[in-house]
Image (cartoon, rainbow over the protein chains, first blue to last red):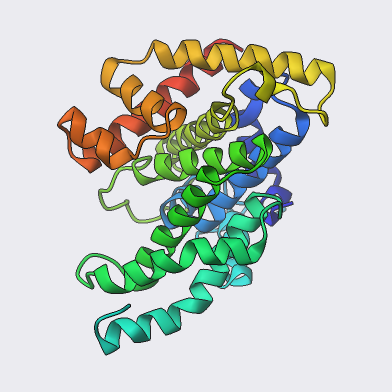
Length: 87
Length: 226
């Protein structure tokens, strides 16, 4: 499974995109599509940029919203994924 | 054969890039095609990239990776494999081509700490388009009913797939003329994208935009049919 799918918000976006095909394609193909969509978000520079802009920032217990570059979950996950793949 | 020393160096350095791209495609094909075969399909593209690269237009790694990936995916879909592998190769090809024109080429605004609603809509449209391209590709490889029957699938899965193949064909037939011609001739009949564009009298980049538009229309149709 692509590591980006561990982020619930990203997984929800991807699940919404594959929803029209559930029941029309076998479950294995749907799982494969989810993985490929995560791959697009991790491997395509423009897609990764849109993801960073779209991803809600985590809010800690004090109510402080993290700003871009300071723990953005999507950016961190995407960055780790790119580093892992050596891109 | 590469003409000059610089291009030869790019080929040498590009070997690691070729392996990286082949590994990614191999994952996409669930390891069902031999890694060495993927490398063999990618070599000519690496040579071509080394010769054709224009430093003013893109980084070599970006340019070469794209060419290599396309060559490998195209090679897999053209060679004789089972329907499942061919379908996945076609799906990756459709998604890859959608990605070329999926997003505006204008400079993106600086990243804002507040979630950007426009970016969320853009992300949604991007994922829906890629999903439609993948789903379309998975069933576009189906030539006749015999192709649909897959021993690994349950009868229910097979019935759903038959219905979906029919629905996809109907939606493709309903596309505007040039989009339909591009999609049918490229995916169903296996014609080269560039030559279809030439015959339609449009540039390759315009053809890519029409292709992306076709995938968006399919995404919308599939979503509405839910």
